[in-house]
Length: 76
Image (cartoon, rainbow, N blue to C red; front, side, top):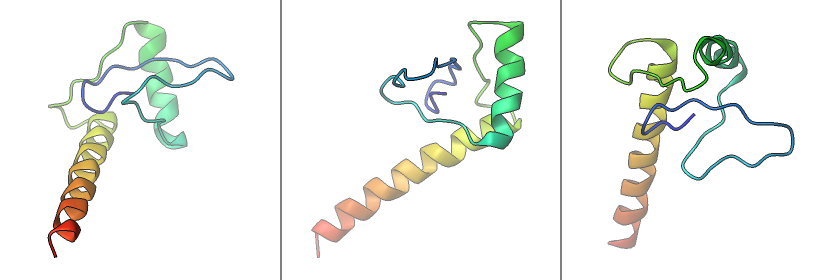
């Protein structure tokens, strides 16, 4: 899933994930699979409070936090 856009996609074995995407944890994998089965072009509403949206928000905040730490450490 791309945490920035909410696009879900299914990878085949041995296939590399597109840039900017994250692999879902096992507990959310089942939810995403069901969503993709209903609609192959599935997208998560990032403004909702579903488990997938909460996971994506956490990933975005984690990326911002890590970038901020790198910047702040360079200014010491």
